[in-house]
Structures are given as structure tokens and as C-alpha cells.
Image 1 (cartoon, rainbow over the protein chains, first blue to last red):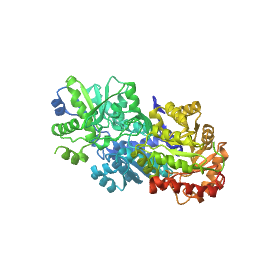
Image 2 (spheres, helix red, strand yellow):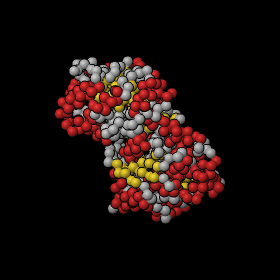
Image 3 (cartoon, rainbow over the protein chains, first blue to last red):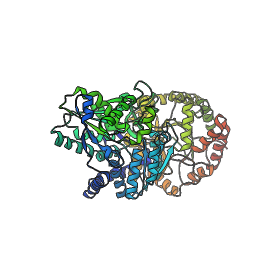
Image 4 (cartoon, rainbow over the protein chains, first blue to last red):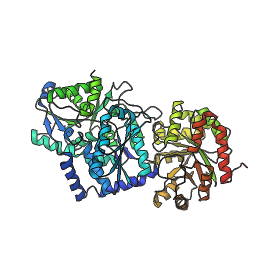
Length: 385
Length: 255
């Protein structure tokens, strides 16, 4: 299964059989009524779906243009969209007879969401996290431990999400017989990018119907932040066939013309890593580059293969927002709406701030508020001096 | 490409630097049927800590693909020992698969093994290797089903590299208990010679692998450990380790 030229399964031979087993489970178990009904119950009773669609009137007024609507994934259990995917994959793992979950994490949001799913379903959980992220997201490390997960600090490479992912792959190669690798975004070898997308598409399905119910129309534009890209794919998919602009916002860090950013679609080139053919930030030899973003959740030098495809086809535009713009958006939403957004989601808000004035007052811009910002307060305090 | 019993040492190219790599290859040549050279990569996700660190040392010393090709060219000017490059696909993909294979062939590389390239994605590499007369080596694993094994065998023009265990590269105290049946199954299914690697760290283990019916044995992490400990001074240790392996497994040109 590929997305145009992107995707595929670029893994050592030993992983082909576990991936075939997973693909079979994804195609045969997931569509079953019993799985779908168990998942629907978990999403409503445990995660808190459906989430609200909120008209951010004072934020919109401050921008002077489009009416901004927020899809409130920040209100989910755990505080981010990540839980949609982790309860679904953990349920699949359990159905497949696996006893243990492993996961990579950047900001710690996926690790926390995996630890929650592991606790909920009674599965052992091991989370791999770069040393740099362990340091800047200490509260999430403590959260994961409280939830019963073991957190493994990864000291190799750039000590961020890329290296945590390497380590999770290594662990899976050795333990796949009883262990399920719960990938946190629309990345990795097939079937992960398709499967994680399917599990996140609930965001867009709800948001599309809520927009129609609340405003009588579709939005002019849908905006989401893109690291690996799961919240963006999740909200975009329902609108792919509509006459609606779709914009993915990458992390420009200290600027896309400096080495300190993660604008993979904007500045990357085709490559192969973590089981997928996609776009990556890399040097001329093919070594993967170090990245920087104020938000650990976007600090990854690659992007899901479906985004690489949607960029190539032109259906989705990819732009970026700098750390500075992101902090501005973080503050503005907090002050105008009493909602503290995650730094990741603040990238989408920062772009909304740029484009809202270009739209009429009767037009709507939908922003995926993928997570809440409580986890980021320490970083923001430091950045604001 | 190999005759039984084949001894196949592996080292990471550029660890600690390419001048040392050339010296190591020269020390290996009298004992080795094939030399496998690892191309260092920023994200070696199939490798355990030993090869990861070797890769990091090689990159820190400025090792490039062009530098590795030059080292192979210098070695092949003096020796006939076949050289197989072991790499992650992005290193070939970034240069362009055709250009990578063409330049490898022109440097004298005899075979290419891409760790994260299963058969399904290997069309471009196989085509380029065919055009430039470079052998292909594909991995087989203990969990590879019979139909895949036959396809891997057909696609491998050099040898089939059987990964002896589930997990990353690295030395093991014990060989996997099921190794005998795995080797029997894979050699039975393959017309190509089968070399066994991953975790074989002593001459005794190498000899047991040959005794179990493998056509060749790859010794990697044990040599990389010597390089890690002695740096560029590891040449004599490498030679005596391989001589001991050769005595144990038999064959070869040395007494």
C-alpha cells in the first residue's frame, strides 16, 4: 500500500512477518462489528468523544476576518488527540493476543496516551524517549511512570524523537512475538500510516458534521500542525473531496533558513527511514539531520508518507510557523479565550492569525486544537523570560 | 561468490578512520573469503550498541561514501578478496541507486546488501546491480516463510545472509537454541550459499555454525569490539582472531 510513490515497507527481513501479521489484523479484525463497537465505547466512555467544536469569537475578533472554529481535541482524556490512536491500537494489540506495548515518544504525549491505554487494557508498557525530551518534558515522564509504564531514556544521536523511534524499532525486532509496537503517528512501514490515519479520522468526521450543524456550511479552510502528521491527516481526510483549503503547518523553529527547524515538507527531500519512503531533512550523503522546535512533539526530521503525497498532489498546502510566532499565538488564545493550547497546536493557530484577515467575516476557518498547553508551561515561562 | 566453509569478517568502514579500514582489510584478506564493509549511517536501526557506536565513530572521523569507494579501490588494486557493502537504503537512495551501484562497481565492490530493503522494494537495486555486474545479497530471517525464502534465494546472486536471531546485531554469549533447525530449513530451501551472521562472536561459535551446515559465517561485532578497544592498533588482533576462526572452521589458504 503506497501513497503515490511514498510509503512502503523498508524494514529488515525479520520484520516482514510481524508486519504481515499486523496488516492481516488491521484488514480482518478492525472492520469487524465487535472491534468497532468496543472501540466506540472506549472513545465515548473513556476518551470523551465527541469533542466540542468551539467558535472562538474573541480570538476571531482580535484577528479581524474569518470566524475561527476550534476542534477541541485538547479536551480529550490525556489532553491531546493521541489517545484516539492509542486506545484503538492497544485494543487491536489485545485482540491479536499481545501482552505488551512499546512506543516511541517526543513530547511525551504519545507516551502518556500509550501508558493510559496500557493501564486501561491491562498491558505492560515500555516507552522510549530521547534524553533531551526526558529533560524538557519531565512531568510527562512522571505521568507515564504513575500510569505504570517503564520509561527508557535514549542517549543516542540527537536524543529526541528520531532516536527514540530507532530504539523502539530495535526493541520490536527482538520482541515482536509477544510485543506490539504502538506507533504514535501516521508514519513507519505499512500498515501503520493507513491504520493510524483511520483511527484519527474520527476528528474530521465529527468536525465536518459539527461545522455543517453549527454554521450551515463547510469552512473555507482547515488548518492543523504537522510533525509526523496524525492530527492533520485526522482532520483533513473528511474534507479531501470538498472545496475546502487544507493547510499543514510545520515547525519553522528559529527560521527555515537556519539549521534549527523541522520543516520537513518545506525543506526536506525524498528519503527512506523508519520503514517508510517519505520526505526527510537530511544532508547530501543521506544522513538524517538534527532538528529544532520549541515543541517537542514536532521535533522530528520526517513526515508521514501520505503528507508527502498530499504535498506532491497539491491537495494540501504546507507552510511553517516560527517559535516566536507560535508563542504569540499561544498567548493570544490564552488571553482571548481562556484556552491554553499546546505549543504544537499553537503552530496551527499562528497560521490562522496570518490568514484570518484575508477572509470575510462570514467565512469560517477550522483549526485543529490538537492538544492542551499545560505540559508546556515550563518551556513557555523560560521562553518568555 | 563464496565456497564452503566461508569466513566473512565485517567491520564498519571509517572506524576509527578509512586509513585504518584499509589496514584492517589487508590484515583480513589472507583469512577472509569475503570482506563485508558496513557503510556508516546516522540512524542504524537494525544495529545493537556495538555497531551503532562504530557507525558514530566513523561519521565523526568524516567518513563519506566517496571515501569508502576510494578505500575499496585501493584494496582491490592489491587483493582479489571479494568486498560486499552492507548499508541502509537511504545511503544509496540519496546518491541515486543507479549512481551508487555504478560507482560501487567502478571501485571494485563485488556485492551489495541493504539491511532495510526487503525484496518487495528491491526492484531498482536489483536492476542496477544486474546492469553493473554487482552481486546482490539478501537477508533471510528465522521467521521467513518458505515461499519468501525461495524468492530471496532467487534474488540473491551472491549469497543469502541468514540472520541467526530475532534482534539487532551484537555479540551473544550463546548461540540461539533453535539455530540448527533454522540453518537446516534455510540451506534446504536455498540453492545459493547461505552465510549466517548476527551474534557470532568466538571462533568456537563460528565453527559450530559451519558444523550445523552453514556455507559461511559472518563475524562482525567481535571484530568491531577489537577496533573499539584498540582503535587503529587493532590490526594484529583482527588478524589473529580471524586466523583462530579459520583454524576452527577449516578451509582457506592459510595453515
